[in-house]
Length: 89
Image 1 (tube, rainbow, N blue to C red):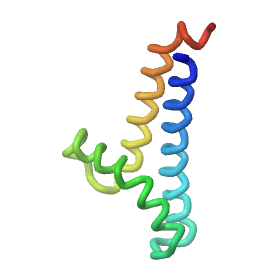
Image 2 (cartoon, one colour; image 1 turned 90 degrees about the horizontal axis):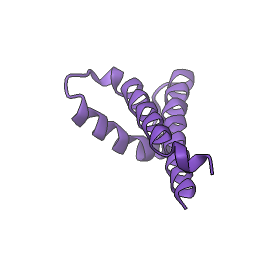
Image 3 (cartoon, helix red, strand yellow; image 1 turned 135 degrees about the vertical axis):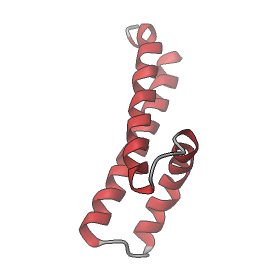
């Protein structure tokens, strides 16, 4: 059961990380336009950015996506270490 909880959390964090990267790439390619695709990316990534802004209040706005990815990677590594015995079953 532990492995399923670990996998669900890990895949969710991976999805969020790829959404942040996708939003950044899309912004670089087409600029900042308001359409349905950007609204979807904003709806998914904005809660992550809010948490990052609270954890790192001194960061500038342009660094928030990069810091969010770093925090997600740190959380994923901590979970991998914490659930390692369960993953080897």
